[in-house]
Image 1 (spheres, rainbow, N blue to C red):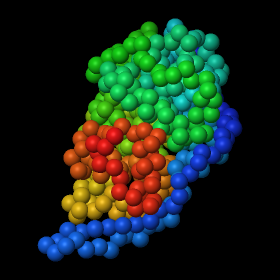
Image 2 (image 1 turned 135 degrees about the horizontal axis):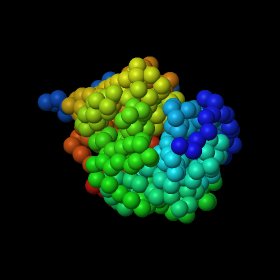
Image 3 (image 1 turned 180 degrees about the horizontal axis):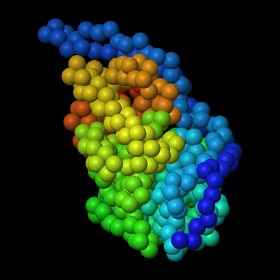
Amino acid sequence: MATKRRSRSRNSRIVPAKPAPQPASMGAAAVTSTDAPPAPAPAPSPAPRAAGFASSQDLGEKRISFDELGSGLYAYTAEGDPNSGVVVGDKGVLVVDAQATPLLAREVQSRIAGVTSLPVQKVVLTHYHAVRVLGASAYDGAAIIASDATRDLIKERGQQDMDSEIGRFPRLFRGREEVPGLTWPTETFRARMSLWQAKREVQIIQIGRSHTSGDTVVWLPKEKVLFAGDTVESGATPYCGDAWFNDWSATIAALRRLRPEKLVPGRGPALTTRADCEQALHETATYVETLFAMALAAVEKGWSLKQFYDDAMDRMRPRYGHWVIFDHCMPFNVSRAYDEANGIVKPRIWTAERDLEMWRALEQDAPPKPADAP
């Protein structure tokens, strides 16, 4: 294996981008059903929240870490920004997730160059979201690997997601003028595939529906190292806007059965003990289960999306409000949980227009468009 050992981490800085335009602040509304004409029910008192897309307020510099997890195994993390994984083999390098732009991908490449001169030969996409995949063009000549389901999602909603995410995350899409367009996989698989680097097996597994319907993890069974993508977070709020709530816990249960000893979550620090891995798996599952149980109860009570949102923010903030991107994720998470609780099984496509429509509905009491509206 042509690698050079390295110290645990190295720091760098990312220059902040200018903030995007922001919607206004939020209020509250509620209804109940009785035998008499509907009468207003007491609505939860909304907690203080960030105005507009909370991510547009996130302009601070992030410290980058490049941590060695084992021989030739590295985690690229940046204080809650999207993570990447690196697996250095005997002939080349495999990267897990490509970052949001070629500019950010080059940050990963610079760390790789510090530990090996071998080329990046393969890039695995854990799912289709633009913030994970649009940096792939920086890896010229590398094979781009994704699940069949992820390719289908790129085809169905990749452009809308790209347009939407650029508006949500102005700092992460710094340098987006270099992005040539959607990232398309050059190799796809169904269920799982294995790659071999000399005697090291690298398993690429479509583990089950959770964060999206195409979620993929990279698992090294001998080393017991798991690159989990956004199926698992650590100290960061799971984004559930495209989630399958009913499936997510079963997917995490499948990951638990692997018994990882080291884990790189989608966001958050690399985890280097079995106890820390188990905690991240447990906390991610608990967040998802808690929010969906609240959604089912809200629908049973006949609550509006707005009333459910205010209640969820007030009840979940004490436990989860310190997690990275909590204020950003919650409106999208509540919207998707409310849809699924109402029987809308397949996640609706987010567009830049729908993003703003959802924010206005939650902030200004405007009724959201029905699920079948254009």
